[in-house]
Amino acid sequence: MRKLIILAILFAAGSTTTLLNAQIIGDDPALFAAKNNGFQLGVGKLPVVDDDSLGAVQLQGWVTGGDYYTGAEMRAYVSGPVQPDGFAADLRFQTGYPQLMPRMSVTANGKVGIGTTTPSFDLHTVGHTHTTGDFFGRLHVDDNGSMDSAPDTYVDELYLERHASTAFSVLPVTTAADGGLLTLAPGGSSLDHQLFFAEEGIFHRSWQGDAPDWGTASWFKMLTSEDISGTPNRLAKFTGESSLGDSQLWDDGTQVGLGTDAPAAGFFLEIAGRTLVNEALDVAKNAIIQQDLQVGTDAFVGEDLSVASNGVIGDQLKVGGVTQIGGALTVTDNATVTGHLGSNTATVDQTLTVGTTATPGSHRLYVGGSILAEEVTVKLEANWPDYVFSNSYHLPELKEVADFIDRHRHLPGFQPARAIEAKGGFEIGSTQRLLVEKVEELTLYAIAADQENKALKAQLEALEARIAQLEQQ
Image (cartoon, rainbow, N blue to C red; front, side):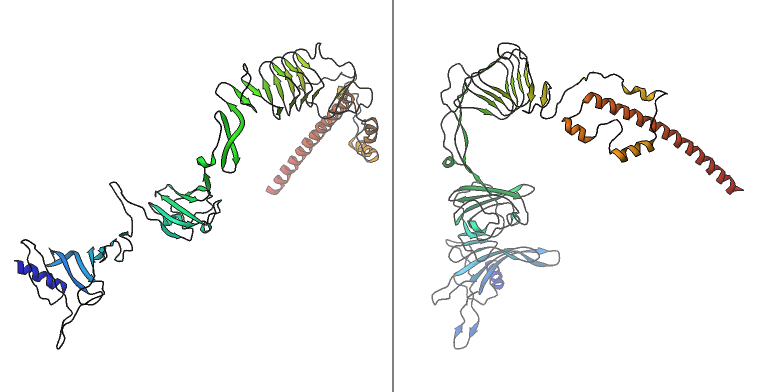
């Protein structure tokens, strides 16, 4: 039985060899398959050469087709150089169906390759690697980052490499020539992520997984303790594009200080310095301003307002209680005081101007701009134009109106533009009366036109019926 096994191995190696001390049991069992390249008269046996197959161990099985077929094979190859006293050889393991393919190799110098017959490292894997247990050892960093590889080149893996910063399609903000690049590609519908470790810090970007390129993915620097310095209870602010430091806001959870680290006792908020509010200022109760008050837009005070010096409000001022202004009060827009202004009720004894300094004429109120009100009542003038609907009213013919406009270039009854300009304006009451008169006249014109239109329509329908009757005869 031993001889049959040995002969099968020698036959599989395809060699003519001499077998010495071969055994499969005993103190040191061993099987030998000896390879030579034939015999030459006057020379003897011919030696092996580089890349020679030294033989193979094949594991075969009988199949229904009536023969033995190989399912796996271990084969040795001369890797040279061949010396008088020996040579180096590699082992290759093959599996596969319907054709055996090299799966793993062990070189003469101890390198193990999986998926390759020419491993460059102690363990060289071509393809995906999965470890179910703990991993102990070092991860190799490739020095091949001379191009911005697309996300679709990273599939279900973690990849480390040294990468040139100028090779990215969108450069990170760094002066480093190169740095370490970590790529995380979870696969599926998840995003791919990259971390670039440069002299200025760590940069991050992400893009759709398996995409043909990184597109316009921008790099963002990650803040570390090198970029952050601050004082306890001080709120942080950006001191640079990618750095944090102290702001002017101090907060210990009980009191808040702006421009001060020691707000006065008894106050929730202390502002050390002048304060400019460009939007609405809403104070639910009393407001005490030690110096000037300047608000860019609205100011709302629920109770009393006391300003030691000047008060400048960019928009509306609304005060629910007494208002005390030590200096001048300037309100760009509306001023509403529910209580008193100063020590007495606010009154205007003379002329009041809003938004203008011009006071042409003898009017009491001058407004430089528009006025918004829920209701404006103008004292009713006599002879309101309902007289237009009286039977005795003479409604001018449209020809008369057209001739008047042609001669005077304005509607009958209205003042010409030059007269209004000379007076500096027009009276709302009389102008409104004339407008109502013209609207009522237009209504009468429309009623007459509608009646005439209906008469013409009736005539047209009668003619159409007559034509249809004639066509049927």
